[in-house]
Image (cartoon, rainbow, N blue to C red; front, side, top):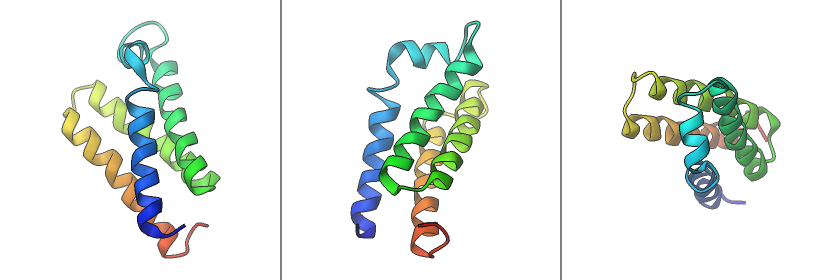
Length: 106
């Protein structure tokens, strides 16, 4: 898959996982409630799985899972805005593309 197609797939996977697959329940539950952290990690896990499915890299999938958790927790705590949150998620996709292009991950 060429880099442009991979970029499009990573962005599309992010948008699908962050909007329709997250839904109102998960968006609310990851911000408050007795299982808030569990729901945050579950949402981030969906994102990590999406990166794995697109790239075939367990390493990038795990990195996405971890970073998505951290980024969304920052937004939940009010440390970032929605726009900053989305920019950070897109920056992660750019990093994954750079790592693949440089040959650091396959």
